[in-house]
Image 1 (cartoon, rainbow, N blue to C red):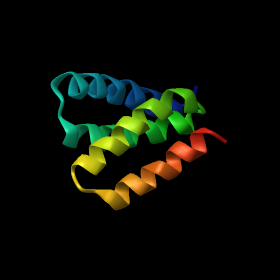
Image 2: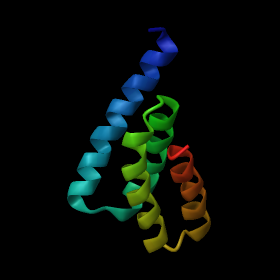
Image 3: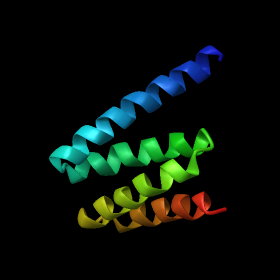
Length: 83
């Protein structure tokens, strides 16, 4: 594993940890941000089965905040998980 991959792997671990914390405390705003980043990384790591449920929650968080355009962007990522 090269340095770049190691950094992405570390970022994925930290984002997954943050996701768990924000899920537990119900911070919709943080879930939207962290979920978007974590979903992107999981897709990059070719883990769409792990990305999809996170992206679904992320999309709902964005809709709750009125971020319809961003939620639509996340829908494209969700659709890509099914390809």
